[in-house]
Image (cartoon, rainbow, N blue to C red; front, side, top):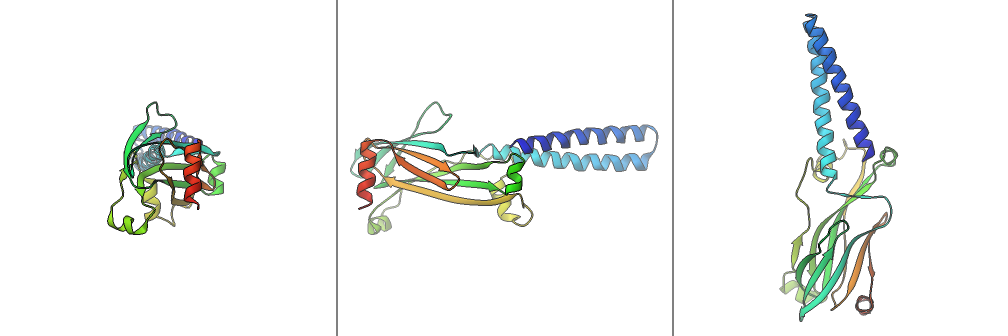
Length: 220
């Protein structure tokens, strides 16, 4: 992110100098030279706005440098196979509540990683939560009953880097990879899980006895 800020500031400075040079030449009635300098200023302005759009879109991805908590999940049973899930996100003052029908909860995220040389410019990996859904342990039940699905994607701001990379895979060489990843764990009354994102991807850790017991039974 620091690399993008530095590049944006350098472009803005270069654009200002180019525009000033264009005005000087035009005042001296050197129309051709002034016009060429003005055209360069317009091109620099377009590049500057493109960087701003990319920077704005990257704000929807949380910066990822070390292993860090992504979300805390709290569950309360409402009825058989019906749970209230409380999602606590870093930096958010209030929890978000959802109702899920099923045996397990699933959290999906998008992860964006840069090329090593781009990391040297200060670009760290980012993640963005995508959706929360439920799952059924029994395949036949899963085929008959649709899961509960909740959209977690934030409103789109700026240029969508995810979609742009899919369209211009060869041109965006500073992007190493974009991939989706999911984790799921059983729902149990009073269970508390913590979702963590490291360089290897998403991890889930049980935070209390109810969660540990449910996770142990799922593995049997």
